[in-house]
Length: 113
Length: 105
Image (cartoon, rainbow over all chains, first blue to last red; front, side):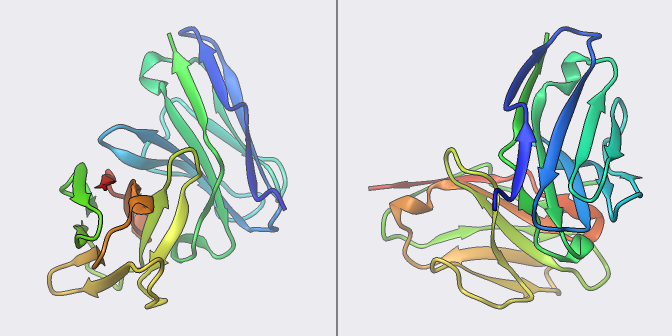
């Protein structure tokens, strides 16, 4: 099993460009999450999907949109990238929500110039 | 408001010395707390969680509801313990800012 996979691994964007970060899990988990990791701030939740067909905002949702395409896939879209969105993005999944262990992807390092 | 506080950004200890990573949380309910670890060039993974009451790789963590703390301890640090450690609270899926541990030979 690959666990949680993310594409791309690295990306450089210009301000105003758009892109979609892809995440997939093969563990048949119900819940999926997107975090951003910034120095001195730890991980902050952007959006999550408790189950297929549902999505909810996390702590820092502004500037992002998500799609839970099916049970396996959860994508994060930046419609108009800004330098403040330069970060490392992690996708995670688990089976039973916030009280359950999360399994993380390898991360996507995004730079917005 | 910061729900999980890890006061130390950096922690450097000698091999064989005890190491303690502090974690305090703000939550009035019954918390579920986790320690996650990220070794160099590896993905973030669970180290231990309070409900399991396990000792993983020699690490233990005790939940102190009175002090709202979940400090991580290991009596004898090893070089392979060098990593970034995150304390996390289930409420709002809150993570601390992380502590980078360096174990020197």
